[in-house]
Image (tube, rainbow, N blue to C red):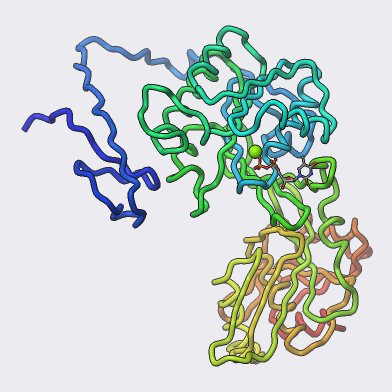
Length: 452
Ligand code: TYD
Ligand code: MG
């Protein structure tokens, strides 16, 4: 049967499509999310080539041109600066500081570049107040408070700014599309439009996207595969640290993070994150241990806190912030079965101080040590750090970048480092004079070293 041009109904939340309207999406279980999409007319395939193939050897050298944003933490996450003609998606929870970060970027970038700031959320006055607050006084900053995506693109084409900021994509709309701004169709079509203009005019566009309640960017991550670079701005809203993380980057490595601190004059860069993250560590208390994690290309020391106490209920409570919940449960099981630390009837809480999220196996050992320390109410030495993966047999396994981690610990004045014995051979001799490196192969001996 010939394919007819049929309308389809697409779920605005997850993108599921069906030929018939439905009240509840069978995929994501949201109600009343289906929107009608007009059929795309199929074009006849022409017999002549409509594409222009190129031999790899014929493609000329291209050196990507990067703008220095003036904020080194942002440059680092972008892979060395904002690439000309690239589209960057900056996403995060509402109120985390995306607009503030971008406005501050315009302050430093606006010294030499013309910037267009499109704000669909705030009025010009609100922007001005914020700019005064964070001390941005650029003459090269043009503000448009409008939500018409096509009008913005027309302006871009006419005035050719050097950088465009869209705050936010959920407020932008194309008039011809009947669905509301923020719906999946509008978000996708507007992003495609900005993408096309960015590429053809060679203007970098930074798009702000709010995360919806499931933690996805504007529905089913519709934007992530379109754009060149996806940055997440995250942190606990009531803590002052904010972490900027690249989860996709066509022009640099991912996993890079930038650390900022929010104060009353906006965001400031934290150039020594290890120092900042461990500065609040209480001394001489049980249930606290310093972990060394690698974020992108640099080591960061973070404080792991644990609390193990008798449960008042039949079902003990377990909670983990900044560390994977399942990983914590697994570690508790290993501690019970392989090392003889029984905490099955205890409430267990794990927290990474400062709002950092760590998901590296290397943090297994510090988390385990913290839990034992809290269980036995014994203090882990304040000048001790540890890293190592814990296997299901209770063994301490080697992790990568051991040398880098130890170097950071030495820099911050730590005196003892507990590592896996498999990591020992790669540690340069000169480090062994500066820090007491203890190689262990099981959890019990690691713990005895940590409290000794
Ligand atoms: P904002 O950039 O508006 O967040 P987003 O654009 O991601 O929604 O940040 C708003 C929060 O930042 C708000 O809760 C107040 C706080 N803030 C400060 O603490 N200090 C400041 O100087 C500014 C401008 C904002
Ligand atoms: Mg905002």
